[in-house]
Image 1 (cartoon, rainbow, N blue to C red):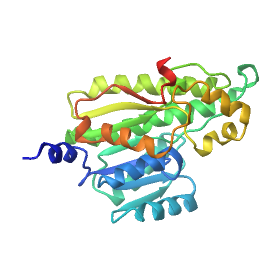
Image 2: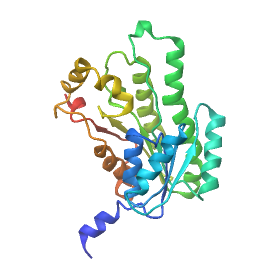
Image 3: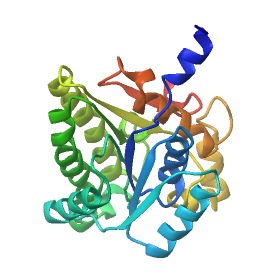
Image 4: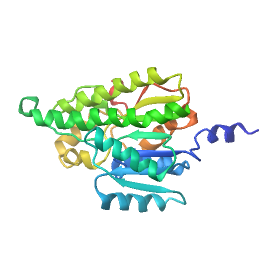
Length: 260
């Protein structure tokens, strides 16, 4: 037996199905691509049908496989139930859940409105809870599942003009820990993946502002932003048998920002 081959096989997702919310672009698409390359059948969800179609085409260019798309706007329990039903109309089981969809509203705390607060907390914390709870139920029944909640370094360290976002992402980290503890003996792992600055559409407003861009870079010991392909492999670790003894952890991918 070759140890190398045995180790690599632990990263295989052949026979597994993964659902990625917000999987049509940015970090969600990068994570979806890594899982697809490892052999998973994919379901990617987002609101924009045109972007979903493009994402599916881009994924299929990587090689043969199966990619399903579901156009969904996740706002409450009813919309999550519709997603669950739509997913299980396409596949028998969802083995891996990537809770990635999120929003941000930036601004000084004194200028943010109650609507800003509720919109971000609902989208970035309440809906991920509902999605994780709903898709975990059959995983717990089968005794195998992977849930990866995408947080942020701004759930770990403070950074101005991001009060609701930081609060939501801090909640994601702790939610992941509590779920992990509850489900640890039932075959379902739950972890939080916390990216630092990556070149995504959500960060375009920062990337287009030279002063803000340099302010970010100044906080990163590696002195650069992350490339999208650098988020997929860490996600794969936590979603595969290679990560079977990892649960309740926060894996931070930030070029060293939070190490300081």
